[in-house]
Image (cartoon, rainbow, N blue to C red; front, side, top):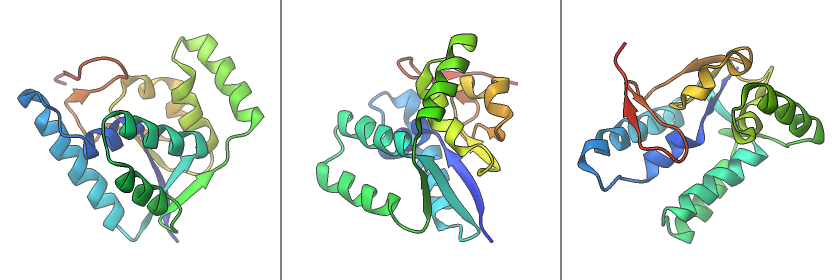
Length: 160
């Protein structure tokens, strides 16, 4: 039986997109290696909400990934390696409620909430995912440490 994990959009983005800035090229290499290792591991399946599936494709499209690559990725997302959970009105309602209480944008919740009770671990470089709302869903690990990556901001390094 496979373990289910989630991989946040920021990791998919950096795995596919090599940054122009030299200082961030190591993030690309780490993300790419991480994704490839998870794809090769037959003991795990990657779960994602239908919202996140669309989000990953749109983020990559906006970053200049060619349509033929996006269509191949979509085909991969539809394979048995992936488990896609449809987003419901109840998911959106809970996401809005938690977003209002935490001031974390609703999109992160739309990625995570549908995976509750399914995934054992969420991989994200976004420090929003360290909030208790997300750590209650599953263990949260940043595979790109020491980098922290939030949407709309430049990546930052933090030492422990």
